[in-house]
Length: 114
Length: 114
Image 1 (tube, each protein chain N blue to C red):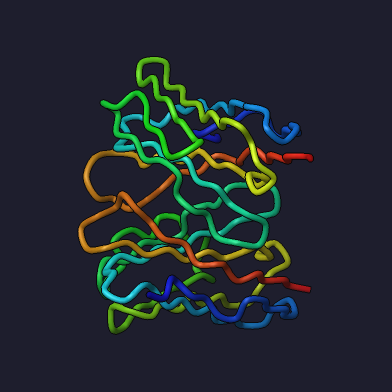
Image 2: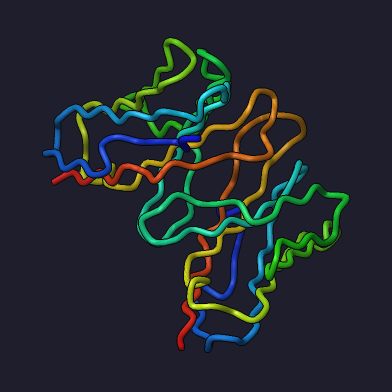
């Protein structure tokens, strides 16, 4: 079956613009996670959804970042008033219901803010 | 403060040789410790997952060890292949239960040369 997919694969935007990053989890996975990975670093947790609700959003760096998952499947990470420091690879992962053990990662979206 | 530290930062070995990567963590309590392999431009892929009560786990040529008393883990790669060239990331799941949140190390970049 299909794995986790993310679109777009690359996004270049100007400072101050708004961007949306999309994640399609593995079908049937109720848990979805967003991470941010800067060059040469490990991924950094942003937010975790269980179903439609954000179970843990403690990793969101500030109120310019917001994520939704309205139907408990596809999720969108939204970044307002982008800054150059937001440039990174944004990774999405999903896992089966009630199982935090195995997270399956997508290929990521590389965001570049110029 | 980085709660998961890995060493070395990078490593070059010849094809066929063995190597060992190290991970020290301060996360406490923790649910499980994982090792991921991340190829350039791809999302991380799980190699091993160990709970605090396990002290070794193998996956083919990869063997992970865990010492929960000293808060150290290692990943040993046997008979390396060119395809092992990647970043290897040590990851700790904090707390207990299904929090979903993972704490990543910065990774060790391994290059296997012919």
